[in-house]
Length: 228
Image (cartoon, rainbow, N blue to C red):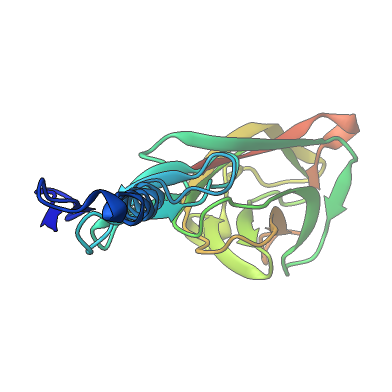
């Protein structure tokens, strides 16, 4: 018997007897069937074939999930989540307008918060905040604001004597206010739901009230997931 060059299929020789022809054809057909199956191993919709380490044998890669892209890992193709490459993957925004007065020297919630669930644990979260704040009462001298991820402080907006934005005036019935914006780029390293919020406090030396969203003014927080 002779054999083919590429797939080593067994074929009859010219000198083989006629009675051996049927057996030779069956042998050749079985070889072709086996080789064809090895070259086309896909058995499910969307599967892809790629060359394995074994000569003339392919391996089936089953279809990935919605949103995944085809990439290479360990020298073979695989499905994976797309690399962000600095792109905005999602945006979450919230508006809060309930007036919240803080008279303590300890930080307290302002009511402004938003929750985002990152799609990748390598993503960064850009926190954008615009908040209406006033200071009123006797001896207005300042206050501070901070941003938290869950219960963790990640950014404090404060200057000398914890003065954030508002400072300098003293006296009875003083009033300072306005709308202030600040931002922070965070790296939460998680794919779990994550809440960002603000807290505020008045200056320890000032007998005043720090009010967020005075008279129902809107404050907003926007969270942008940035792909790594």
